[in-house]
Amino acid sequence: MKNTALTDTHIALGAKMVPFAGYNMPVQYEGVNIEHETVRNAVGVFDVSHMGEFLIEGPHALELIQKVTSNDASKLTVGKAQYSCLPNDTGGIIDDLIVYRVKDETYLLVVNASNIEKDWNWISSKNDVGAVMRDLSDDYSLLAIQGPKAVDAMQSLSSHDLSAINFYNFVVGDFAGIEHVIISATGYTGSGGFEIYCKNSEVKQIWDKVFEAGADYGIKPIGLAARDTLRLEMGYCLYGNDIDDTTSPFEAGLGWITKFTKEFTNSDNLSEEKKRVLKRKLIAFELDEKGIPRSGYDIVDNNGQLIGKVTSGTMSPSLKKGIGLGYVAPIFSEFGSKINIQIRKNAVPATVVKLPFYKK
View 1: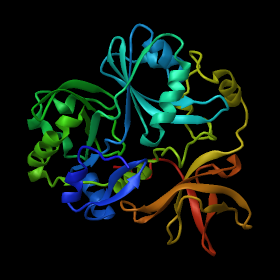
View 2: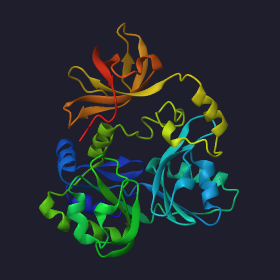
View 3: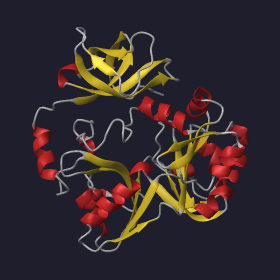
View 4: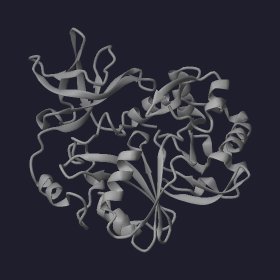
């Protein structure tokens, strides 16, 4: 089990620690609902240093990234980031990731913790163009400072105007007394804020100064459990639940990051799939009655016939009702469609809704 550079800090704060993607991670401190509301209404800090970071450099860096990712990275200018995925050869998704253009010939790929080795091996296997690759995952930390008060709370720590960093943009600059950190706005919570990428040796200083600066704004440390409820309220896919090696970008509603302006892994087959009627689609649903949907629960029609599976589900702290994502046949995917979630012996009625669940 790996530790982050802040593991001892989390333990000292009384966090409940659990194994997650090979790391010893804080799942909660005070409780999921309290932490969730802190991010929705004030400012909270996540240690997400388990995420993977690959540096792709050199004159052929873009060529490699274009080959392995579904989105069009040629659209990126320095200081911009892009959500994308790594398609496999059989129509599924190896991982979803964020691509940052740091310099003209330098890109940072941020990947899911559970897929670091898999992604590295896959991209390396495709690197016949001579791009320079470096795995920075074990050397770098990542803090996500999220919530509507994040910018005001943190502005004193940087000479950059944090409010000027638009969504999916970033700067490389000073923060909390450390030079040359990445300050990005690619948040996973839907409540604003930004992320700080720094070296492991720098993260404790940054953590301490962040909590000093945020003291008057109600800042709190936030665990992975609230991160999951926050992302689900926004309808963001979680790798391993809502997307995996067997789900296509089109089934998962990720056609918008699948660009056929270039060739990439399996692009010919995916282009053909785009023209066909899908066998299943990822939907969002809200329960019409009391209940908590969970990953793996059956989705059934009014006759009790199996029509799909829940991939993510929870009791929404903001909406105070059960919400979830799942795959169903397209006939059941229209907004307003009535389905049922099999929760133990009860088929609980639910309605297919438009994302996001949480609207500010």
